[in-house]
Length: 118
Image 1 (cartoon, rainbow, N blue to C red):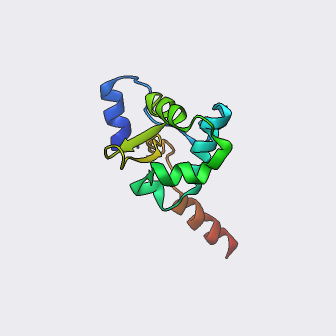
Image 2: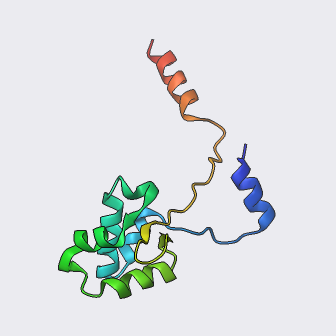
């Protein structure tokens, strides 16, 4: 049974979902990939985001054109930017997960396997 997200998406049409998946990061240019992987590794920044100064410090000299790289990632919607300069915060723009289209769930599969093992 499709979820609410799938129903709404069907009514809206076949628009491409916004955001990215972790595999999309592998196709980025080197400096952009460095910024995205740094954000990916920052568990605390997943919800609130990471400040520009903290991000600049973490990537160090691996990203020579930091401001230009951030602008490009923002323009391409790889990042969600919140706040205003100089207190902007950055976080990854993840793609919303679609509901499962399978007719069975994880719990039913586990229940069946446990019953078969006994």
